[in-house]
Image (cartoon, rainbow, N blue to C red; front, side, top):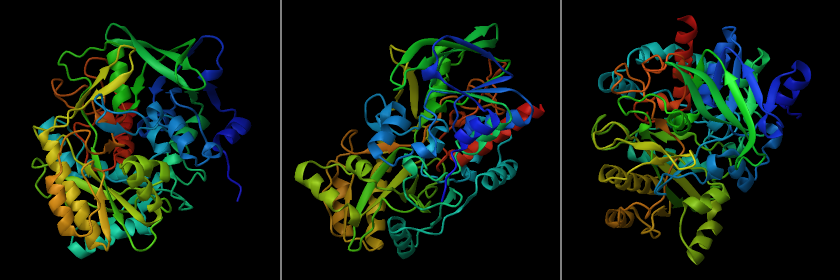
Length: 527
């Protein structure tokens, strides 16, 4: 089968406007109707819809333009090239690893394809607690349907063994569970979604919305870092950017100035607040960069008699929301359970252990199943998330306290994973916690987990989902933008990414970003 390189074909046949900042030798100035910073779920949708409306668009992406031919399925190379900070990004204290894409297509290029609608309890909470209007389940339903059709999102029924053990455990325990919808078309079921899709099966922004915008004349700048917005009165007059060197480790001396009457900030829930902070954007109520949420995630592992090969097949296809809303929206922290695909390098990091113990765990990888619990933050007074702050060089970091409310959720989530695995037929279980041994029964694991020391850095916490920091709210004391995504103090700036969310959503966020940003952009172009 011959695979098409969408971008190479577009440049050859249609003359797509692609500018690689690493190849620029002199300063550049461009103008358009709209400048979009970021090319992930939100930036892709914004470019698509604005170009459909006849507006000229410039897209700015700090990461590299990589296409199917560039996804060589080598973990070390992929993590270093296609993830923020070479996949070493963490919270300020190092307690939580943060996985975010840095390439054209953003995190949609390297995520695991799980695509959930925003849960109705989340939307109700935003309306009642966050002064958000126009985002009820009925209003968003056609937007979810539109994006599901465009991105070929449907429940994936072919559960690999790593996912099927979750299904068996849930069924045995009577826990609610279901098939995960995935944004794929003609998927080869390779299991390497986190390294970039080599077959173009993943319907990411990289192969859908961005090519559509380029066909309509949009310009894409990649390996270009947005540094700051320049203000003239209450509006942005220009975006100042810098070309990156080929390694993406530092900016070059080449400067880029982009002007437009409209700016869409879609650099992600760390990048977007950071750009506004560097630009010294107005923030009269001190809400910018605050209440940033992560879905902190813990990991657990089962040893099985049969081979699981947790690195083959669709990464995530079975989930359980049994504990998501069990204690209500604002009670103890709820969590969503999903499989964790264990490619060898990734597994070597998340499974913990030292010396012989770690070597033995890696030797047993074909017989190991992995799962994670996504902890739902931002719904309780003791769950206020983190704060995006700037280092001395202007780069962002996230100060994210790990408090007792979160630790209580961590403990309950470990217990759930252990119980689930033994109910599903596992012969042993261990947790990604420094105090964990290998346990051979649910009762043994239960006693041990209750005695773990729940202190940050003693256990593995990670997150691939960053939300908030530029929350929408019709009350300017509560949010950076209004319910239509427009900045409260800057007339020509809209936010179009997950930083819009007033809390975490309690599900993998890409479909929520696609749909909500789609509505925001439709309101913009029709208003």
